[in-house]
Image 1 (cartoon, rainbow, N blue to C red):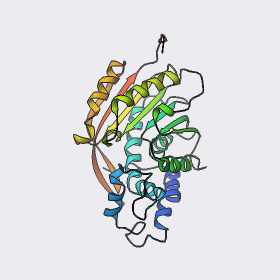
Image 2 (cartoon, rainbow, N blue to C red; image 1 turned 90 degrees about the vertical axis):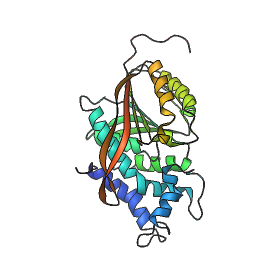
Image 3 (cartoon, helix red, strand yellow; image 1 turned 180 degrees about the horizontal axis):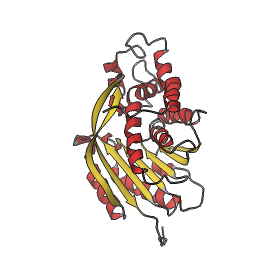
Image 4 (spheres, helix red, strand yellow; image 1 turned 135 degrees about the vertical axis):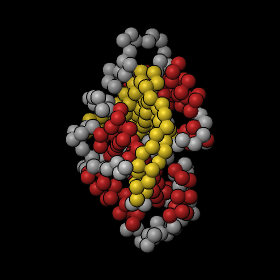
Length: 274
């Protein structure tokens, strides 16, 4: 089985804004990235769970985010492109609103743009506590290489999302990818804020994609979050463990992941009150 291929524009974007910036840095020589070996680089980013606004030794927050994108982003893109390919196989929603919780550097937005065809159009709400992640995300999102028309909205948390349009009927796609691996996450508070955001966005159908490691620890807060989704009217469309081939160190590598797909249909009656 081959790894999921990224479209040419996405390969070019990552090469120009991530790979070349790391490899051409004067500190990077041979196998060293910003002056440290790959194992230490992975340790510096905490496997993806570091505080990316706090310097680590000689590495600045922007260095850390570039290392994250260099080491981790391509595999996550391949996972999400495969997932979106299945999710949107029947129909591709016109101009959806995409809410990416723990968005990193625009990863979910890039994956969706790669899935929607030659002229993708959507609003992208990227939520990440790290300013450095959002900075790199906006740099990638604003590139002329990204096809179609993507309007970005960035926020450090769900409660601070700025959305000034009146509630409408557009479909909403929510991405919750590897978020529950964070030990600082308040899953109950996150659901409450997310549900409030849904009401502000409108009354359209909401589809939520959850992906994570198959290990128990990173999913420890998932059962409570799942319960709240079901109580809020979401149906479980799929929930299983699967396997996908991603590219790591220029070699295909099989990665097991836990995934779930939830869906709440368009509301036909409007909820009254707050």
